[in-house]
Image: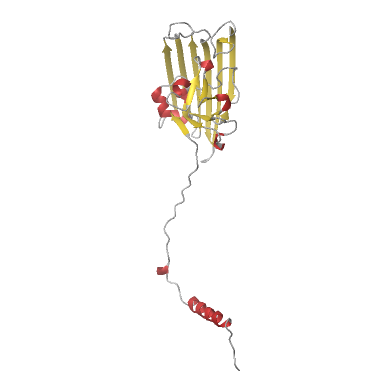
Length: 277
């Protein structure tokens, strides 16, 4: 009997014979190929950021927003009295910015024609400024950018091994005959929970301009309370809850950023603002 192999079947059978021969040969462990470790690094695209950390805040001993952003070229603070201080990023006012405190958006203000941000510099851990429009990471309403205030946790104010602490600060201004005092208490309740409370009192008279003239409508009596609770639920989950209350009493002009005049008279006003973050 004769068997005829065509041109297609010849290489096919040859291939099968080679594979069969290879399969019968044992593979030595010495012939194992070890590849080099491959490192994969991800780099996110971030906007132009100008940050102020706790170390810088402590060095500059900031008393208000003007002091806090004095070294930030992107940010300017307008208005003389605290009530009129408004934030600007590259000339765009805070109403067109996304401003948050501990992640909570500050979408309202206490009084028209006045600033809407109230935070004590001593309580800040970090401030992040993203300048410019068109960045999705800045969140909604960020036509000119965003400013993120991050407050300190009670653990950040405690020294290693310490369970309870306090901070007392006082300042005096000869121009306004003002006294400002701040008292903060903080501590650990358990290994996983900590809390802090801070109270600031500020009594300020009208200040004088460069010519020694009294600027009406710049004096005020102010009380500020800040409280925060932090709990570590698991190794990867942390709960932070903060509350702030500011009460401002004094004589205010109808438009605080303008000079007091017949068309912009003074009248007594009592403002109270509360925020839960």
